[in-house]
Every structure is written in structure tokens, then in C-alpha cells.
Amino acid sequence: MSQEKQYILAVPNFSDGRREDVIEAVTGELKGIEGVKLVSVEPEHDFNRTVVTVIGEPAPLKEALIKMASKSIELIDMREQSGTHPRIGAQDTIPLFPLMNATVEECVKLADEIGKELHEKTGVPIFYAADNATTEDRKALAFIRKGQYEGLRDLLKEIKDDASRKDEYESRKPDLSTDGLLSDKSGATICSAEAEGLTAYNVFLNTEDVDIAKKIAKAVRGPSGGFSTTRAVGIKFPEYQGVVVSVNMFDCENTPVYRVFELVKQEAARYGIAVTGSELVGPIKLAYVVNSLEYYLGLQGFRIDQILETHLYD
Image (cartoon, rainbow, N blue to C red; front, side, top):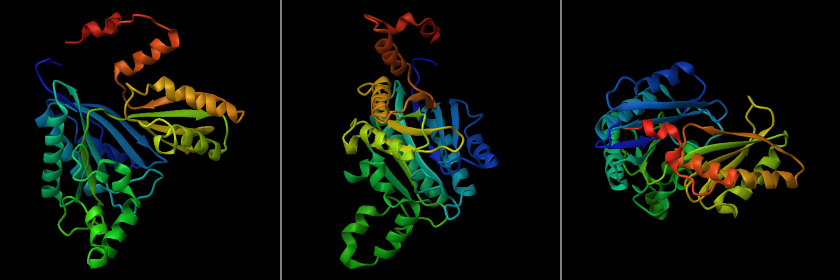
């Protein structure tokens, strides 16, 4: 990739992780577009969502993401969808992050354009989050997704014309919509931009007691006393033995992966169980791997150019 060109990272997720034909059709919209590279596709059966990682130059990336989202909206019916991961729409999120020669401000502008053009093309309601948020509350996905698709859909219908609940309605309605409600079929899409991307990280425990995983997750996540840059849940994935502490990490520079891993091990020992391994869901920045390498090997004065493959970069 040329140093003169701009590259933006997008990590969208759509609300189907089970139907292979739908997953292939949606992600197929990201293929064959010059200036866009599909990095990974990560379906999650229990969550019933798929997380996609894609890198591209701004203009073709915008085109690709709108095509992808339009296909999700065409093929996924939220009235029939269920899963364990919070969601409010068929194309649930489209988050953007600067990757190379791009600024957060440019990503914010692109996310704003994607939301407007997707709404104009499909009619799907749009929420803006993170640095695109129109209110302080909407910076957080959890606020927008409160109640999930079913709860928010029904709430907006209930309070839209209730003068006594006008403030509540104004705080929860989509930023862009045709009628101030969610789409019954497609829900809504959240568009956003911010400086750091999400790193999804799972830690496996050798117990079938999901309550222990939930207690450890509570110790990890920021709102309940853990790391301010993480969110975590304890969950059982049917395809794996044991239970999982599933962590979303929003700043691996200041809260390194190794620190979360060590805290989970420490908390697990309290319950007399062991960590059997961990996994990254999708790509991770090289710098975030290096800081864990430095920690575990006790490296001093390590430089990233000591990794030979970095000399192959343009």
C-alpha cells in the first residue's frame, strides 16, 4: 500500500452468523472493488452476527460499505432474527477508524456521508455514535441499543405521540428516518467514527459454570469496576468446551491485551479454575501484539523494525 494514499479501517457487523448463503451474499458486496481489501469475515453462531474487517481508500470504501449494508437490509428480517449479542438492525453497525494517512475528522465526515447515502438508498433509519454522535449519550452503543431491536422499536411506537414523554422520544429516536421510528423489517444502522478500533478477544475457562464467567467479566469491564476501555460478558459458546469471557477492547495501547488476560487468570484462580487459552476474533494491530510480546519476554529497548516482515511494507 502506497504511503501517499489514505486508508481507513471499517469493522462493520450485520445480524446473521448462521446462514452461509446470506453471509456470502453480504460479504460478497465487498469483493472485487479496486482500492478495497476484505481482510476477514468472522461469523459467530451463538451471537448470530458476523463481524467483517475491511480496509480501503475513502471513496471506494464508502461505495463498498453502502453496497454491503444494502444487501444486509435486503436479506435479513429482524422480526425473525434472534441471538445473544445486542443488536438493533440488520446492518447493525458501520464503524470507521483512521488507519494510514487519514484523520479522525476525515473518518467522521465519511461516516456521516455513509449514513446519509444509505438512508437515501434504502430508507433504513440511521443513528450516529462515537465521534459522530449528535448527543453525549449517543457516543455509547449501549445507550443507542438499550432495549435492543424489539424494545426500541416498541418504545418509539409507544411514546412518539405522547407529549408527556417528548424528551424521552427525542433522546431515543433515530438521527435519520422517514417516520421517527425503526424499520419493522430492518431496524436501524449505527454509523460512527473514532480514533481507535475495537479488538475482540475471548478467554476460555475450563468450567461449564457460566455464572463464574459472568462474575469474571464483571471484574474486567469498565462500568462495574474493571478497565475503563473494555466491555465484557460471560457466555457459553455451544461449539466450545467450557465457558468464555468475551471482551471488547477499545484501546489496546493503554489497556494491553496481556493485562486483560492476566486479570482473567487471576480471577479464575479465585474460583479454582484455569484459563485454557484465548483467541482473537478478527485482526489486530501489530503494535498491540508487540506490547504483549515485550511484557511476557521482559524485552528492553525492543524496536518494531526488529520484526523482519515490517521491512517488506511499502
